[in-house]
Image 1 (tube, rainbow, N blue to C red):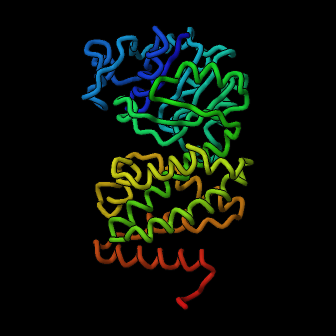
Image 2 (cartoon, rainbow, N blue to C red):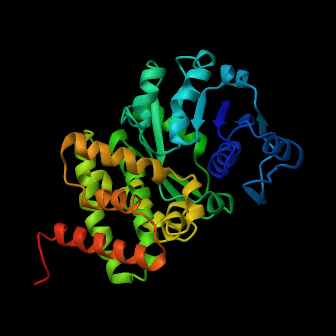
Image 3 (cartoon, one colour):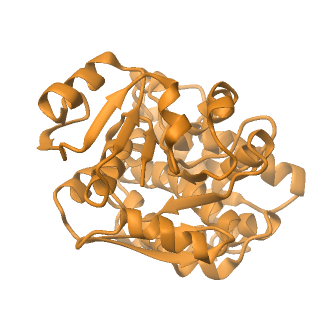
Length: 331
């Protein structure tokens, strides 16, 4: 089975390496010539994962024509690049090809999930979403890892799962593709809040309480997108939330931790762009999303130095928590 992974970052590379255990033909399609050369010549992604040797069945290229022979296409590019990418490559993709989304986010403006963007650009292709508590370096280190594959066709799930599964990587089928994507997007926002809280000295009590409040807010977003709140208990839900929110290896956690630092304004993380879309989604549907609104407000505060910003943040946090508890002041 020929598989193509679009995206030569850490996550795309980890997925390609999984696929290469079960296939002799796995291609990484990316633009970075340095990544392409290091994979083809030295069998390592020198830019993103320099210490992990890759399976020699992996070939990297920037030639879109490789999509014409693919049976499975895994997409691991930033969500805000999704539509532009699909418009470039759709002429090379057969209708029988399964698309597996490995990115997380909500399109700005349209407020569409990534699967909805695919359905607009490739209306006849089956779409699945791969999501779970997975760090690329742990997968490459062959540490046991678990993920959900969400989609409407369970028969096709088995085909994709057989391509991905190894002795240390396991998948579980769920039908709730929308809930899976909402959770994958929302957890990045909560991870930013966690990083910010740790930076200003919050303890385990506060962070643990935040998880409970976050799960309730996630339920609201899942519902308005027609998902199943029970998906919260899956790998793509509570599993991914815990991983992303409590690890300093999480890019979104680190972004929140460094939010005070001015250089952080140009850092690219999915949670940063997703925040605006979730805020707008809540506004359009008139739902109560106190945590999302709180972070949205904080990111727009004028930064007048560490002390002033910390005080502003604490005021926003106190206001948000009191609102969530139905209080106007401390008892």
